Image 1 (cartoon, rainbow, N blue to C red):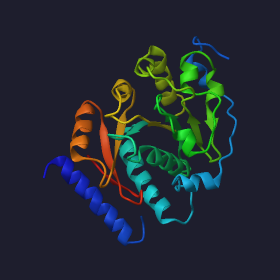
Image 2: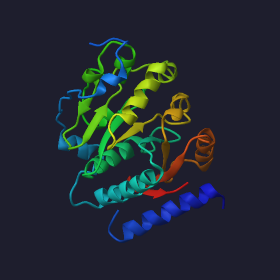
Image 3: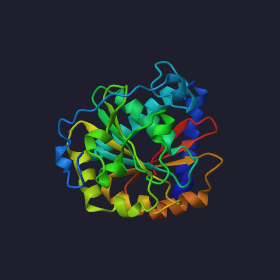
Image 4: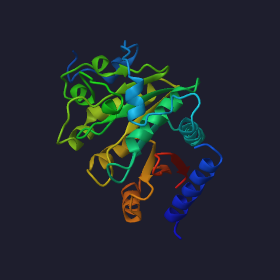
Length: 266
C-alpha cells in the first residue's frame, strides 16, 4: 500500500469512526492597494437554498456541521503551524464535492471568532459558488480583471459574521491567460496580505478538467484535494498529485455517499 492509498484508507477509517460515534467603476488601472476600507453590501441567502445544496456548516446542532468543525480545526491547525493564510480547494474532476466542501469550510471558519475569511470562486469557466448560495452577482472577478468593474462592486458580504465572497462574474473560455496575468498576481498578493486575521479560500477548478489550477497554484500557500468515495479513481488522484507536485498539498478530504468529509494528511 503506497502513501496515497494509506492516506485514503486513513480518511476512510476516520470517517467511519466519526459516523459510529454520532458525528459526522474603476478600470484595469485600478490598483489592488485600493482594497482598504472598501464598503461591501450584505446580501441575503435563503435557508432553503442552503439546505437543498447541502450547505450545513452553519447549523448549531448537526452531525454534518460537527464534521465540518472537525475539518476546520484540522485545517486551521495545519495552516497556523506553517503560517499559511491562503488555501486552494480542488478535486481531480467535477462532481466530487470540492465546492460544497469549500463553502461549508469557510462557513465553519467564519464561526471562529478569531478569523475572518474570504471565499474566492476561481472556476472562471464554470463558476458555481454563487449558485450554491442562491445568489446572482452583478459583477465578479473576471469583470474586475477585464477592467469593466471596480473591485468594491465585485465583493459581496454574506449574511454570516466575518465572511465575504468574490464571485466569478462573467464566464470566460480562455481563462488561464487571465489567471496568469500580472494583475491577478497583484490581486492575489493583496488579498493575502491586506488583513492579518483573514484567510483566503479559493474554490479552484478540477485539476484534470483544465489548466487553470496549474496556472494559479503558485499564488497559494496550500492546497486541499477533495475526492469522492466510490467515485474518484485512484489513478485520477495519482495524476492530480503529480500535477500538484510543486504545490504544498496539506491533505485530502474524502467525501462519502452522504457528502460527509474526512481529512487525512497527504
